[in-house]
Length: 235
Image (cartoon, rainbow, N blue to C red; front, side, top):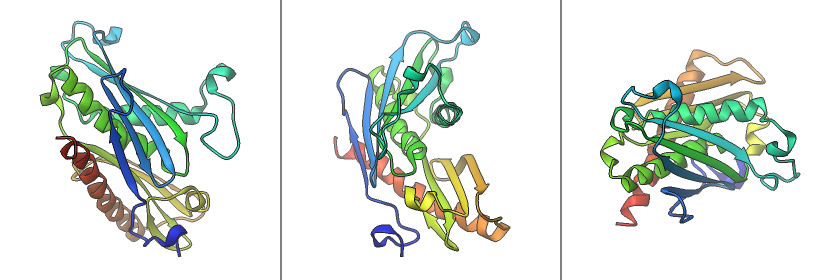
């Protein structure tokens, strides 16, 4: 049995609350089980130096966990003077993923900054940040009249093999003991953006890989229905 009696192919409870804060172009609180992430999207009329004069816009992301996000408090990375390798890797993943849902050729001279702050962590923080961040990006594009630059929703989910079973949407107690752990990102549930997979406790074979990918696709399709539904509810 999984925690809370979930089926092996069942997501945790999902909630996406738009307009969570009022000072930015896009703001989302995404909750997946006990993992909660605030995703905000800010628009600036500027681009990095390497894009000036190119006719393109840009999207970049930052990620962080607040000190009280886990059971034991940890110092803010700003207080330590540098980001950890884990943080840098995660925010690069978020940025790469969210750039796939925007036609940057339509955003000449514009940068969208997506900030993802984990306020409570119970596994899947990076995938929740991507899923919630995509919703914040669409709101940001709409605020500047460029919703036509939105290509489609990017969704992400974790899958893994735990105690010999392929499981969808791992929470921390499962993730910490998984033999195989994967994070999968897709655009519109039919195109892969990124597949990150690691044999943490035991090697996995091709059949298990295919099972995990199919499981992730099912979960991402469901997440994207929540993404679309967050706009239908407000219309």
